[in-house]
Image 1 (cartoon, one colour):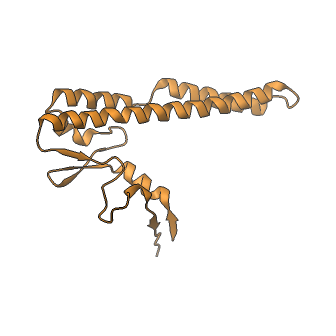
Image 2 (image 1 turned 60 degrees about the horizontal axis):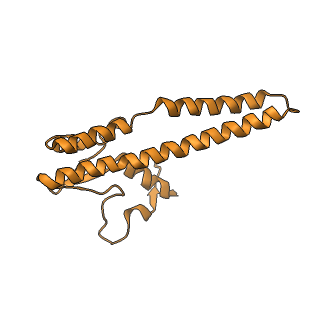
Image 3 (image 1 turned 30 degrees about the vertical axis):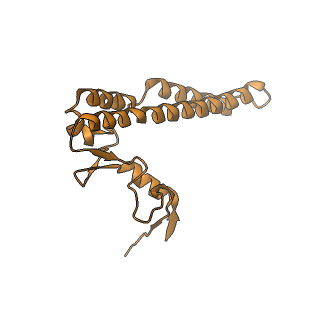
Length: 160
């Protein structure tokens, strides 16, 4: 038996749901088309559809992030093969690691800010349309009054 708090978060990210007409609707139908599960409803409102399209464009992998990550990895690999007595080795290792870390934080910041487009799409739809969409990005509210994001998951691995 394995107790993990990250397993609960991982399952919530992969299966985000919205409540529409008392039914749970998957928001993300696949990892490449986030928000696509709400398209049927959001496309009824042109402004909401525009925000959804902007959200989906923002979830695509950017070539700049891939290039910077590749450059950082290349610097680290180059630093590993550089002569031990030179300052270039340290510079390449530190520079490569710094590039990867900065790239990671920039990508996460852009991803976080992009989530606002999905929230705006739902808000715009809810202003003028029925049925209302209730979206809980951190998971559905639990009956116990605790935040769903602060739970522990028990994973059992059964084998026979």
